[in-house]
Length: 452
Image 1 (tube, rainbow, N blue to C red):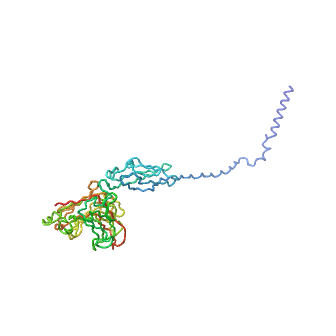
Image 2 (image 1 turned 135 degrees about the vertical axis):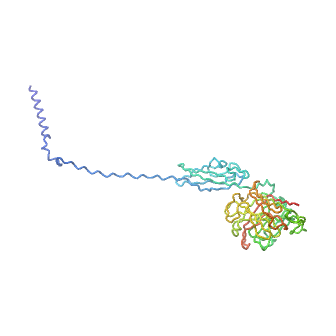
Image 3 (image 1 turned 45 degrees about the vertical axis):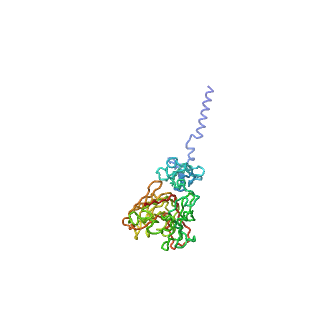
């Protein structure tokens, strides 16, 4: 019993002690600063910090080609002719350049180190292999940067013709008279008898001397065997009435028989079949055909007035004072191709022009079927009675033709002769500028026929 009393006494003592330490509210009222029933004011919320604006990435730019969109390649040539070039505007490394393997591009190859382009095999001008068969090959190049962004370029490659020496059997080591029958021709030169380029009495080399191996700096055999005619813009002329120079063959049917006069209705010249019977009997021939295969190598594009630039006469029928036909080639400055047209002079009257290939205008564009410098073509001038026909062929394909009606032109009683070569029709006003500019043509075939 004593034990139980002690336990209860100890428990009451503990409870009394706990009440004294915090059980009474009145003993702690002075420690609170907030009145009873008041809600505390919350602390202000800090303003949000804006997120940084996103940085836009710099756009990648496509590669840029700096190489040309055009190129020229001579036929039968396998050397490189074009170097591709491109840059990356926003890259340090040069872009990769790829040549397409389809279409015309498949006929060419690109050197991956030098970026030079060359044909896989020699191309033949006479047998074009491009898709359009017009000797213009369209190559597609693609430049690719390090992010695989691409840029393409189409290059138009023009294949040009070259004279095939073997086709004509010409030797480059002999004078023109050993490659061509010049027995019925003399030549008129742009020099005087002293070799100078002044005066109005130019030098003439007759049939005998011409056929004894004559050649000089204006008339000679080319490296491919062609008969080359060169004419400067300034030189000796045929008369005081002209400013123009020539290196031109003049037909001489007398073939060196100097007892026959060079002029008149006689055995040195021919007449049309529409002529009176007396003239038919007296002439050296009746009607005629002149056939010339040639290339124009250069024309003068800077001298003279606009209407003169780039034009030459490559063939004629000449009468006593007038020309039933003059055949022109003209390539304007800035054009790659030349045109061909004819002039018909009414007897004692004005000229009538016939455009055969392209235009004779001073601002004409490249003719659609025009003729390049150094490109072979053939012209025929056919005189028969009351008409003259001109036919132009290239690679045995007719590319131009015209007919001139002579029935009202007044040539029935006139006498005639052919001319072939180069008559220069660009000129300085006084013809004494001292310029060394020259035109040049090369003839590969020359023939004439007449009826008896």
